[in-house]
Length: 143
Image (cartoon, rainbow, N blue to C red; front, side):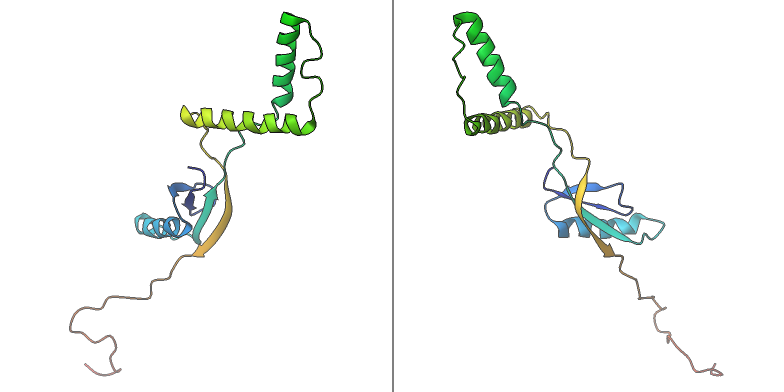
């Protein structure tokens, strides 16, 4: 659902997962027909990707690898001279792996936050149907 668009009438309860902002707006305008009240507008926003905290784990993984290696081999020099760039590279790969694993097993949390909200006024209806064959106006005093 991330990257998708939703609509709301109150900026709290967002509905849908549309591919474009325009599609969400059209769905919101169509949903107006089912309402008994007229909201001040239709709000359209994009679902924000939830922070799954998949980054920042490289140091813990490196420490765990070192501890297991030291327990088996007793060689404290293993991975002792890693650069910040190497640790950052591992962190990037770990975050990607965690995210892919969550996606594969459908474990990603649903987005709960909407960003980049735009407000669209509700179109006013100016058409009033008149009975067939009757004039809309008449001259005063005319029967």
